[in-house]
Image (cartoon, rainbow, N blue to C red):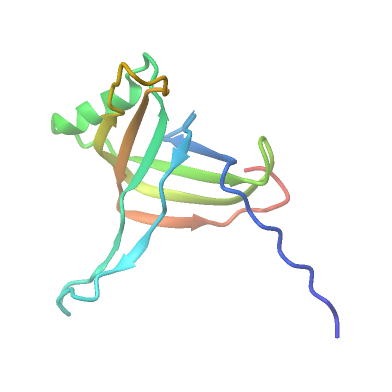
Length: 142
């Protein structure tokens, strides 16, 4: 009987995030979740995607806040977001997901505390229409 090589374990610390065509640095990406509401009425689909939270260090850039303000002011500014899992820092893409027509439903910062030395962060919570696991050639990046 032929032995099978076990698949390598994938780490969660190496990833890239693209919002539209722009790559932005994030320290953390929340769970990607597809779920079914078992209590939904039979005439209404109970399938949905949970929101995804992106977290990064707070800087003087207002880019994410500005996107949220556009939405809060009534502008429909939905963007595709791509999350790529990498084999290692700067390594090849091993998995990637596309959040279709994503928009920020919440923007927030960490609390401020004069007694702490922690790094301030901002969070962007995204709602989206669909979650697609993108197929790619695992030999090349992209």
